[in-house]
Image (cartoon, rainbow, N blue to C red; front, side, top):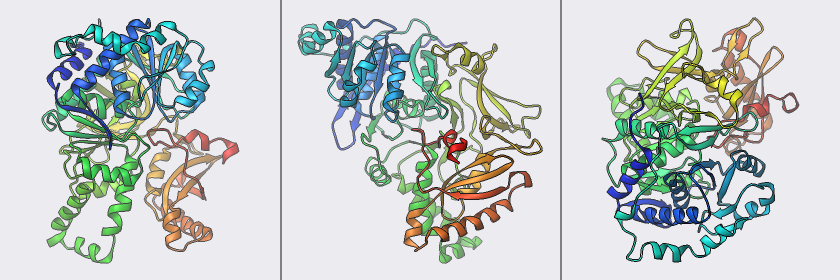
Length: 558
């Protein structure tokens, strides 16, 4: 049964409750307090109303994370329009496709030049607005042009004695199933699909986070936003939940380097950290492993008398690398390397791995770090059910199904894909393969579409092979592909480390051959690699840092 809770009412309540608290900060830039955000929301509402935007109209938002992006998103929802966040990393063609496909009326963009130059390719738009200052870059509407030119005047007339808390009244959704936003998946296999997310899913994800983190986070606690807000993982758990809880969100506006991220962790000291595996793995491999993988440390770790103390010191060092002030690090978005995970578990580090999908806005599984089972992705989250489509879910992998308040309405203008993803009983078919133990812990084995078929019909999960390969000497990242009946590993080596060690390409090839032999010794005969090939460039990735696997499985690119 859907709770009688209104999401926009929760936004309204948070703004009124935390009126004079810091809300959104652009790292090394301006800070907006909650009343500043309310003021921006009100101005955008005046702009929408006077330019003819109606409830249910689509408003697209594309740009790097920023306080202005966040305010535009909140203004869209609280007006009753449908928000369409677009990943800034998408190509111009993809952005134009999404703007046209979703029938956007207005388009907020952080990239003024390309947007204006290509406005002719988005013929149904009434206007393009610059996120930075909400200036109109392009307009097909006299109403929009006039409204923006006279916005401050209109605002002054509406609130002649200053804008105050009693003036905050937002649109409240009429039904939990009302469409709140359309989120286009990052997609690794062609044009992405528009996931229709209802208000109940946004509220349900917030309520889940409030139940599992509400006692750990306090009003005014700092949070660092690293993941794209246009991706549901970053939006739900680095922005929406924290804003509704009264936290202070910092945005790394420019594409952050590992050095900037580490510096920001030290300065901001976030109370909770949301991350994809790649960020955690890079910091561990570059900042921690070199300090502990020496003969002296190995000797100390081998002594039972001091082992516990040494692990405690290592845990303290790793914790400080992430600011030293967080309750836990929640890792999701892609598979976590087993070597790094086993290391973190051994030292008692406060981490957990969750599981979700854009189609569930996004959470499906989670467990607090105290109860987390290594190798799993937790149990079914609050408001959700999970089952494995298998005759023996504990031992035989099957497709993971999810059902509950978080599940989407379907794909926008795509009934065929909707019918494939949602069955008549309301189960969302994730396309992921997994098992579930008797306690309800879910273990992901890989994407069903990535599963390879061995010569004798054996199921081969390339992610499991890649996880082992990624832990081997000089391997930065890898994917496993199939050529006929043979399996081949494509590897991007650690060229920086190779240069420091004076190794050339031939040396790397020999190391990879040694890796191949050691790897094959760990694998059944049907999943052994016939070869490892080097790649000079990093693999192309989606914004959540998953490798675009389909690009490397095409025969022409092998």
